[in-house]
Image (cartoon, rainbow, N blue to C red):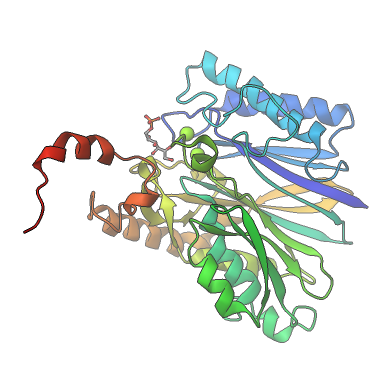
Length: 365
Ligand code: F6R
Ligand code: MG
Ligand code: MG
């Protein structure tokens, strides 16, 4: 059975501030998707949140980039925004950057990750969702899952993974894409994906079977809007088990609270903290950035789950370490590298301050 798994997400209002989603907004989204399931458009769905982002997880048989599915998501965000406006939530409708739907939500503000595949006899998928960070945050975790034998022992000792994976990388500034084969081309691959604000892993494929293994959202809100309207807060789908890394290999990269862009005003580096869905409440300095993981088994497209994968106690040390790193980074205050370099900052007063002080700058010698 061919199934498409679509995650479409948007921040349509925060409660309180940018720290959480309001239950009434989630309930409205549930109502909209229940209707679409009743009408037969969706096979199944799950509505959840990561911080202030509303996450629509949907299965269907319409394929990727389908207008009906994207319109359903857009209309759901519009209805949710109405609820957010009634409650005067903060930033109601903030990620909806277009006035009207025009065929596909890509480029309109919401983040999208979709993959179509033939459902395996046991189809394990993990959906990662992040808040207060940007789309390149998945680069290091995806590299570790699919190319690093110190993370994924299956690359070494499982015959069905030993030939490696292909990485599709997008240059979001130049609007270009390129693919690299791991393990042969990992040094070339790392030249690019080690610079995650510009080069992002869009998808990963199994080299022998060509099967899709992972897909991420690469929408950069600031590039769409031409100004800061909130961080991208990306999502990523990873297929697991069998020909793909095991669940434990997929989750293992997040034991390192890697430094990502985002946090307060989208303008800082901070540790990515793996948390249970209930703990995706970035509150300290509007952070630190969070990542949640919803695990499902698919059964004829039905979403069996979710299991809240980071609720596990074994991620306590990563959370503890993330809090320690957060303290350390915060002590740098407005200094780099806690503050992002000038060209990456989402907020800046530099032009105004420069303009005001122009006459006071004098040439050296
Ligand atoms: C970061 C984020 C927050 C806001 C900050 C100011 O992605 O969403 O840190 O940037 O709370 O928010 P506004 O400008 O909406 O008052
Ligand atoms: Mg927000
Ligand atoms: Mg958010």
